[in-house]
Length: 232
Image 1 (cartoon, rainbow, N blue to C red):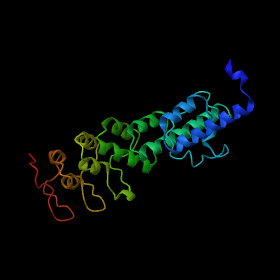
Image 2: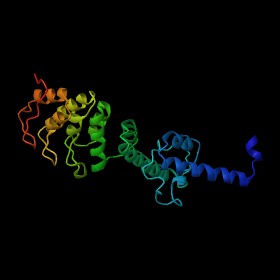
Image 3: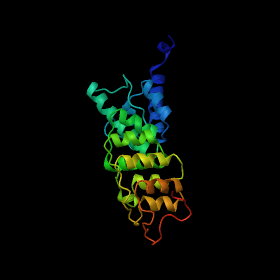
Image 4: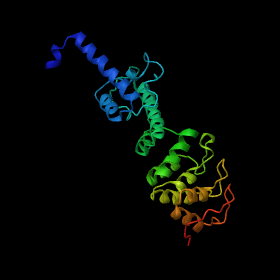
């Protein structure tokens, strides 16, 4: 119908505009816009610099995966490669923005954690009290006691113990159930119980004491972790 009357120059301009829109959407992490553009056939090569390695515009993107017929020009293998690449970008973006629903999506579509992204995803889920995401991340192979030097040696258990949300008590319990060690200390010499005390999280303190952690364990300042809380 109406498309038959569109001049080639107009069509080229529209294609260029849509490709530019995809790059901008990736840059600005507008996930819904990215999804809509891909579903309407804007090629994945629009997110690349000249069709080669991913451009800086694509780094940290939040694409929702690759729909059929997305414009990859090298066949099914190319589609699979680009799909995996974009899902890895989605995973990096989701971890960076503490978006656990996107983490679940990326993992379900074949993305895998490296050590750093796995740690930060687990810590984010623990601190937010997102039990479903925590279980998905642990099932993906991230260790319950994972630490990262750039985060002061803290673990997800430390994050859950000190989180200022009641939901984090659930992730604290789940981590303990999955074998997280409450005795692990961060670079400041603080264990999970000290993080709970510092944040005034009495419920977390009670849970840790109920799991066998001593309420008399001195922190790096020499103080015990229980002031102000009824532990039994």
